[in-house]
Length: 201
Image (cartoon, rainbow, N blue to C red; front, side):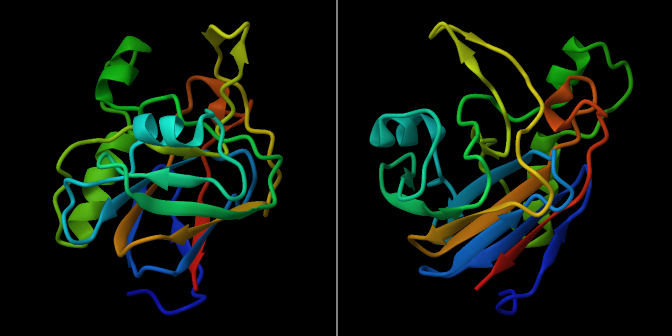
């Protein structure tokens, strides 16, 4: 377990995971601003039960979470609750984690860092194996929906130092990826991914 209040880095273009007890609060900080942080939560007792965006959208009846909303697992049980948000409140629940196939479609011929591999590596550091790559909660990611039908990939609207706080509703493993996307501008117009941080209390 992480010492209470310790500020943990999510390195730029990389992932990080931690074991969390029920009731603890994880605060994810957009340290430099303009950085998307893909977020996953797996139930500690059984990693095949995990936070599900599909099930959470049905439970919340919305696509963008607000303070008070509860994310649920693929078995429809509470896993994380938003308890504070100092950002403008724009996060994404629609878009899958980037992976090697996404970058191949974007024209990459060589390996490109990606959130799917970052999740696998972060869990491996804890001695765990990802049962699959669930669709993540994309903190700080700005995916407007136009006309109720069309999505676009836009720069984040949060500023450096803004954060979101999530309370664990069960014992879990939380995992993050400081998204390495540098082809489309979801990490800002500079297309330069940066580190982010989180604390646990």
